[in-house]
Image (cartoon, rainbow, N blue to C red; front, side, top):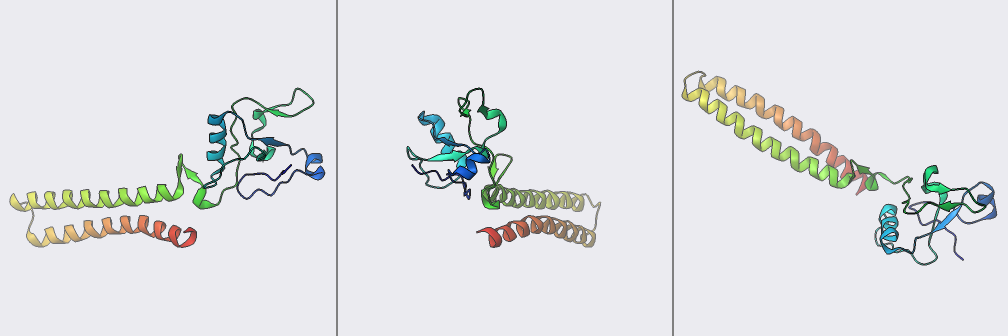
Length: 167
């Protein structure tokens, strides 16, 4: 009976030593919906639990256990939730980090485009009403443009650093 924990990078194995340390092993639920939630929680692409797959107790909260009897059991419907994922599998606000960074990059580009349009429109209005001369208008546009480019650069730099380090 295999007893290696199915969690990402967990090397706990069903041994006497681990049992003495209080580590218990739990089979995947038979209920298909809960079983699928366990598989998703593990964040192992393409992983499908077999009838013999197990997850060790280190991936559950203390409140998830029923310790009233001689056998340590999991309460109904609990999902493993304690993991040490590498950065590319971690989630930020419920989203994976790579998806989060891609969204940030997209949002930064959209903000830049909107800001550029707004600044051009404002400067055009000021020029039309003779409230600003052409030279000052160009200087203000360059200043605003440089500020926007710097802001977007910061987002892109973080995204590029992430891509080179983890992709």
